[in-house]
Length: 326
Ligand code: FAD
Image (cartoon, rainbow, N blue to C red; front, side):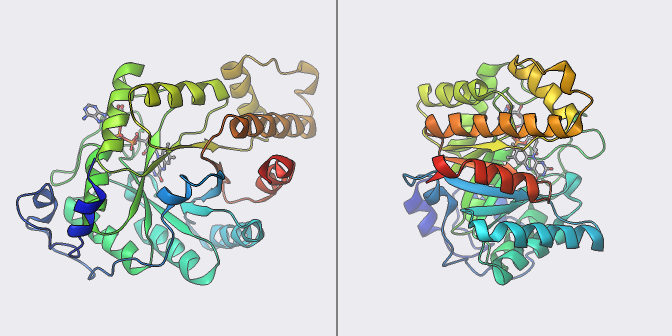
């Protein structure tokens, strides 16, 4: 783990890292973009998830056209009064949304009362481009970044081929962001293990190494069985890693997702409801609310709702959880 005092000493701005450190790797021959303005004033999500009360946060994806843009902002405005701890904007597959991710995150930072976190992936980016992206996010006033490797464009299960001047694993991106300024950095966690990991043991080892490379917190992939989350949390803690792991959940409203819940949780889905979309939705929402209540009982540091840029299901779930949120 990179010590906080080391990070503070290294706040020299992008491209001015001291010699003889890991920072060399990221500073050599890099054509810098915008000058770095160290983000200040915004809370660090790493601190928020360590506070006694759990965080509640919402995830959005960057819009691809005007219609999606309008939908995103409708959802943001409808969810803003709930005063989530933070909101995040994903990074499109293959690095395809770099401009809209920055633009949307910046707009949230400047035009709303919300605390934004930008997702950043290493796909198709050289180290120089990644440093430039981090600089743009800093310029936009963003202090919190979720550093993830990303999947290969096209086929997410295809071979991972790193950019010739890029990074191979998320742990390296965590280091790059940490060395670039006073950012609070999150990483991805996988309750069922990452699909590419051959087994749980190596997945856990790599996850802990990623945390120790400078992550302040982690957020899980969505899951449908609380026990899977608890097993992840417990095996990571048993290995001596205390990085808070926020639970990623998605309010489910369609039969396809509920069928997945059934497979994963073993909870039987009443066949009579299968032809009734309203009943399906009701059951899915009830199942998600009960999952969130159990997570809160178990002392989860936070719950991150994947909204798919819609607000209705998230607001319903929020209302259902009111008694346990208080
Ligand atoms: P890594 O931590 O690098 O792990 C990838 C694989 O490599 C794992 O199997 C790991 O065990 C293995 N590994 C790690 N280190 C080593 C090592 N040193 N030696 C050998 N093997 C190693 N994708 C997007 O495109 N955009 C997004 O905005 C986005 N947001 C996400 C948000 C969350 C909360 C989550 C959980 C995922 C998100 N993803 C996103 C998906 C993510 O990019 C993919 O799941 C990706 O395949 C893995 O990213 P990672 O950061 O976990 O990679």
